[in-house]
Image (cartoon, rainbow, N blue to C red):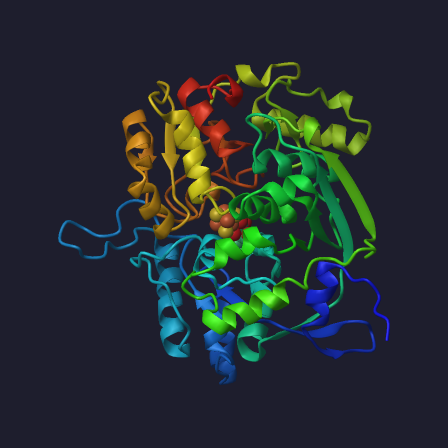
Amino acid sequence: MSHQPRTLYEKVWDAHVVERRDDGSCLIYIDRHLVHEVTSPQAFEGLRSAGRRVRRPDLTLAVPDHNLPTTARVDAKGRELPIADAESAEQLGALRTNVAEFGVPYIDALAAEQGIVHVVGPEQGFTLPGTTVVCGDSHTSAHGALGALAFGIGTSEVEHVLATQTLILSPSKTMEVRVDGTLGFGVSAKDVVLAIIRRIGAAGGTGYVIEFTGEVIRNLSAEGRLTIANMSIEGGARAGMIAPDETTFAYLKGRAMAPKGADWDRAVEWWRTLPSDAGARYDRVVTLSASDIAPALTWGTSPEDVVPITGVVPAPESFADPSKQAAARKSLDYMGLVPGTRMQDVAVQHVFIGSCTNSRIEDLRAAAHVATGRRVADGVRAMVVPGSGLVKRQAEAEGLDRVFTEAGFEWREPGCSMCLAMNPDKVPPGERCASTSNRNFVGRQGPGARTHLLSPAMAAAAAVSGRLTDVRELI
Ligand SMILES: CC(C)[C@H](C(=O)O)[C@@H](O)C(=O)O
Ligand code: SF4
């Protein structure tokens, strides 16, 4: 029997079909379910009122991240500090009660392994190649970097997965985004994904699962790949995937929840069959050349509003589409920017190095490299928030915390922090932040806050110069 060549996405999808339905949708088995405090309370409440249990607690992992303050969590006597914000305290309390009642594995706020759910999953080896991974959170797409089919779901779907370990889904179209060549000096994974979103647009991936391919992707570390897959959703895609390879296996081997011994060998054997077959067809193919990708950042309020750091604030008239022109006018007004201004002349008051896009150890190393021997500029508040307690510990073992604190950065506890204004870390109205996060929406970092998305090295460069800066001048 001859087989049609299949893509990575099609292979993972096919391996999880429980039942095909007449309308083309399928009942899909879910291997891994991550849970955080924001999107789970109503789901657990639904189970409770229906008298249901969690079907597979062993495939579920809960961790608090969004609402947790990133300042010290215990007092001098080691007692857990109360959360000042009532709504945050309630959501965090609900998660704790729910995991206890339903027997769901839980990483507590004070545990060394606590962190942002999308940093914790890969780091613990909970996320594995070829698995289906869901979470009530749009940046679940990150986990696709390891060859998983991973996507965000809504709260009612969270309840459905808790109850049944399945979801009814319709297949997506497939898009290959191939990045050929070798990255230039000072260019990072963040610059690559910003270039991709600039090219396809913030809605360009709608209805698609993207597979990122090409020499640039193959040469990236697992951390860099996580940065890219994380932002698939900012290009509108349902999910983003990267074929598992030796880099993936080396990253996962020995992780706490990864398979061990003979199980590991069997798993790797299957994982090696997952990359897209030669001749597999995608519904759309987009190619980029590494030589066209420079250190970059956003100027507006959509992640597609990207310019190289050597560029200027664009004029609304420079866009062909009238609706984009109108959007650009609104963005520039909100951002307080004048067309023609050199990006490098724009002063910042805040720098945020963190979020599930860029808070892993390599990100902190890249930022520390720039910060070494320098000082945060006067008038700038700069913050480094490791993605997890394990990242924090590793960074401290390498002395990166000292590099940061000696340079005048704040060194914080793990959490979502200033990525979104759901905890005390906020950017005040009208102030400008160079941020390694993934969303520059209106009000994202606080009401009236102005966000420029960029890489960790570029963020550190902005911190020490007090303005948006070409990192290549500092490394
Ligand atoms: C709070 C949560 C539901 C939200 C998401 O879905 O992504 C958040 O993580 C974000 O990044 O905006
Ligand atoms: S770090 Fe930001 S993007 Fe990631 S899960 Fe938290 S709020 Fe969402």
